[in-house]
Length: 210
Image (cartoon, rainbow, N blue to C red; front, side, top):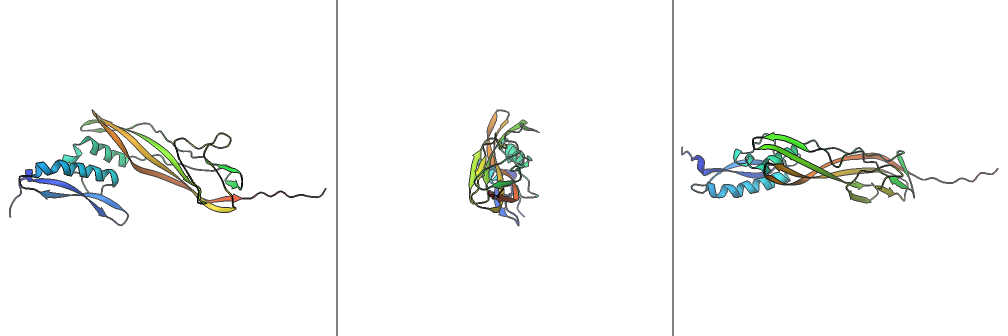
C-alpha cells in the first residue's frame, strides 16, 4: 500500500443531504506536488459553504480551516442561541376595520456574544429585523424596531374579513465579528414564533328601542 505524503493531502468541503436538511462535511483529497496550490482555494470554498449550511453532525472542521479567523466566527455564529420573539396582539383578538397592533416582545440588538479562541477573543455583534405574515395574505417589514401596543406601536395591520388566522413573526439576523485584526459580516440565521388561532372579529352596532 502506498502512503501519501502529508503535504499532498488537503481537505475539501462538500454539501450532503440529511433527513432534515443539507449540511457540510469534509473529505480528504490528494494532489501530488499540488496540495499547497489547491488548498487555499478549497479553504475559501469551505468557508463560503459554512456560511450557507450547518456542519453535519459528527463532522470536524480541519485544522487548516479552523486556523482561519472567519471559520471561527462562522462556527460560533451558528452555535449562538439568538433571541426569539414572543408576539402578541392585545387584547388577544382583532376587529375588522381597526388596526391590530403587534407586540413583538423580543430583542433586536442583544449584547455582543464573545468566545475565547486560540487566535484571541472573538466578538460577534448581532442585529435582528422583523417581518410579519399576518395570516390573511398580507405581510409587513422588515422592521428594525420592536412592536408596541396601542397607542405607541407602529407595527400594525387592518383585517377586512372575519377569520381565524396564524400570525407568524420572523426575525432575520445579521452580525459583525471581530477577532484580533480580522473582521467581517455574517448572516443567514432566523428565529421565528407564531400566534396560532388568532381571531379576527366583527363588531356590529345594535339599535334597541327605549
